[in-house]
Amino acid sequence: MSSSSASASTAGGTTTSADGSTSSSFWRNNSRTIPGRPTTVGVNRIGSGRPIGSGSSGGSSSFQDYQDSVSDAWDLGDDEFCIISGVVDTRISKRASQTAALNVIKTHKSGAAGSGGGAKPQNSVRSDTPESSGAATSAGSGRVVAEHLADEGSHVTAVMRIENLDIQTQQQQGQQQQSSDGMGYVNDQRLRQRFHAYPGRPQLLKLSSNVASKDVECESKYEKFSNILEAPLLNLIALKELSWSGVPRKMRAVTWRLLSGYLPTSLERRQTVLERKRVDYQKLVQQYFDADRRDESQQDTYRQIHIDVPRMNPHVALFQQKLVQEMFERILFIWAIRHPASGYVQGINDLVTPFFIVFLQEAVGADKDLEQCQLGDLSIEQRDIIESDSFWCLSKFLDCIQDNYIFAQLGIQAKVNQLKELIQRIDGTLHRHLQLHGVDYLQFSFRWMNNLLTRELPLYCTIRLWDTYLAESDGFAVFQLYVCAAFLLHWRDQLLQEKDFQGLMLLLQNLPTHNWMDSHIGVLVAEAFRLKFTYADAPKHLEAKS
Image (cartoon, rainbow, N blue to C red; front, side, top):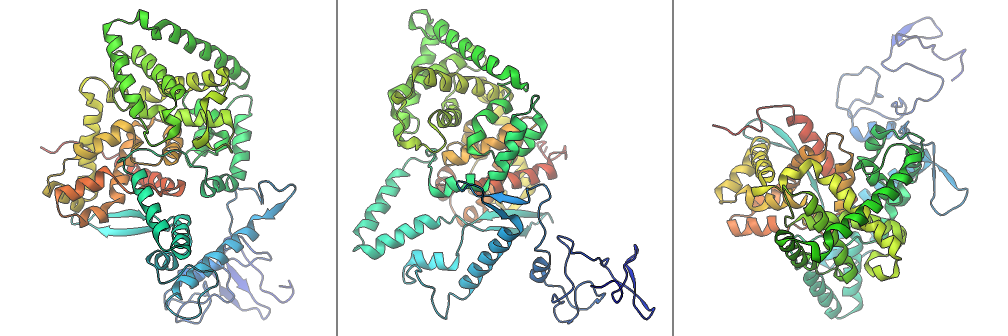
C-alpha cells in the first residue's frame, strides 16, 4: 500500500482518503501485517458479503473464517524457529510448521467428512471391519470435546470428554485381520485381555514411538528447562510454572529432586548435598534394617512389607526381579520406622514406583527400554543412588499428605467426604445416580486418594500427573481432590448408562485408561484447575449439609 494513495491511519482508527472524506474502521490500518489480527480481504461475514470489521451488523461471523484470518499468530514466549531433533543445523520456521499442521488437520477433517462416499484414499484401512470404520470416521489422534451440560441447579459445567483412540493399536488389529484367517487377531485379543486382567494395576512405562515423540515436540521446552536448571541460583517459581504442563524425560530426574525439596536451589551446593544425603540413607539402612536389631513391632512391619512388595505389578517382569523387591523393602521399611505416627500402610508401596522408574531411567539412559532392564547389569553405586534418591523424594512427597496414613486414615476419609460434596454441587444428576443405586464414594474413591490414582492410570501417565503434583506451589493435597473430581466427571456418560450397582462398581473399579497418553493427563489437570479455580475459594461448598 503506497503512502500517496492509501488511507492514512490515525490513533482513533479514523481514515482519511485522497479526496478528503473520512470513515471509521474497527481495525487500525498499518503498513505491515500484525500477527494474530484478522485480515479484511477475502474473509466475509456469512450472509452479508462484507469483510470482517467493515461495520456491518447483519449476519453472524464464521468462526472458521476468523480462525483462518488469524492463523499467522504465534506464542511470543516460544522461539521463532524450532529445531528438529537428531538433524544437525536444521531450523524450520514455527510459522511454516503451524501452517503445515493446520493443512494436515483440514485434510483429515475433509477425509473424515467425505468417508461416506467418493473415492477412498490409498493405503487406507479396510472399511468393512469394525475397527477400520471407527478409524476412518475419527482420523488423527484423540479429540478433546468440551460439552456444556445444564444441570437442574442452573449450573453449567464443562465436562471434558476425551475420545480414547489408539491409532497404532487399531492399525495393528486391522493388519492382523487382513493377513491371517482371524486366529492371530483372536490370540492377540486374548493376550491383551489377560494382560489387563489386574483391575487398576499400573502399567510399565512403554517407550513406544507415540511416547518418545513427545521429546521431539519439547525441544524448545528442553532448552527452557536447561536455562533454569543451570542458573547459579534456581528460580523455583519459574521451574514450577514450566513443570506444571509436563517435564521432558531427559530433565525429569533432576527436576523432581528440586521440586520435592530434596536438592537446594544453589547450583554449587547440589552435588555436595546429594552425596551427603545418599551416605545418610546408607547409614539408616545399616542402623535399622539389620534383622538382629528389630523389635517385635518392627518385625511385624517388615513381614507386611515383604508380603506386599511381590504383589506389586505382578504382570511386569521388572518388578519381579529380586534386586528390585529388596530395594523396595528397604525403602518402605526405613520410611515406616522414621514415621511412627503412620507406619507402613498398604498402598504406599505403589507411591515408590514413579520415583524408582524416573531415577532408573536416568541411570540407564533416556532411550533404554525399561521392560528389558536388568538391575544386575547396573553397578552397586548406581543401584544405591536410585534407592536413596527414591527414598528421600518419597519422604518429601508424602509430607503434605501424611494424615492420609495415620490411624484410621482420617485424612482420606475427609477427602472422600469433600469429593462427595463437590460432585453434588458440580453435577447433581451424576451424584443422585450414584446414590440411587447404592454406590458410596468411599467404595471407589478411597483407592484414588490412598494410591494417588496410580492404580487407575498407566504408569507413564502417573509420572506425567506427578509432574503437575510436584509443581503445585501450595502442595498437591488440595489439588488432588479436584483431579479426582475431574477424573470422575470424565466418565459421566458411561456411568449414567449403567443401571445397577454391579455395573457401576465394575466400571469404577476398572476404568478403561490403558490407552491414555500424556495429552489425556494434560486435559485432566486443566479441568481440575478449572474446578479448583471455580470452587476452592467458595468456603461453603465443602461443608457438610445439616
